Image (cartoon, rainbow, N blue to C red; front, side, top):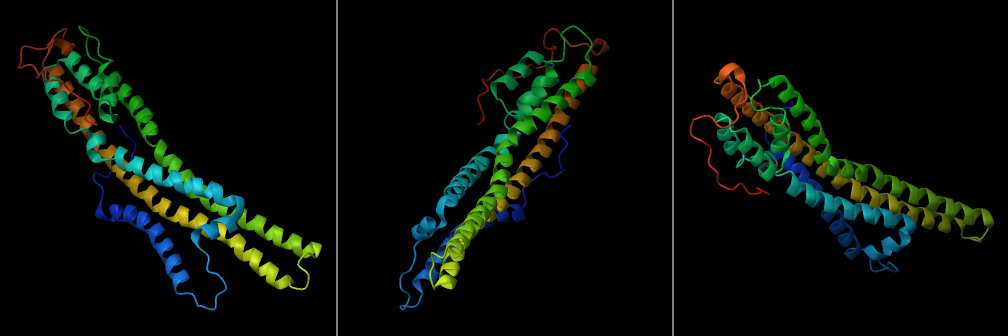
Length: 282
């Protein structure tokens, strides 16, 4: 139903990738601070992080926006892709009980009151059932398949944006490097550097390379975060696919107990599902 790799849980290695990505940026900044602290006293002037930012020029601003976006998306994905929020473990037993009693109305109410991938997909299938008519399980499964594609695409948007940041941040760094080198050669060509041309060229190229460094500082941890959350997302989707399959089996088994597999107009005389209010599990 869900065309995703069959992974059920997030492994410790995947969690390590996410943590490594978050720690990498802190480590790089700490290394830069240590290098500045241990610089020889003969150094004319040590540069702070703000000084590097100013030297980097215009390219540092989009790189800065990328860093803010990567952190925001990382936090959002951490909250959105938790196993409890995606798989809705509190909703599954309620749905299963309603389906065993063939209380389609109650099952739809549960799906509507607790929106999520599982409830949205299974609710789309239940809406293909017509009370009093023979159930068409092929139509139910088709509706669930269509809804699953939409749900997976919608929930993967934060990962898509994070992937864009991973690819774009180094490009902004490279752009800053190229424009910095162009500026250096323009100075040399115009003769503005006088007799100290080699020093001017070295200084300008060094300044230009700062943008590439900062672009990579943003992109590398964002890449680890992206792959970590992508693995977690696909694992949760695989579990949701299994839960949806089990609910479909429960529905089909309950329908086989009715006359000609028809959808009842009201719940069967079996024990009816509990009517406790279902709140949003989020």
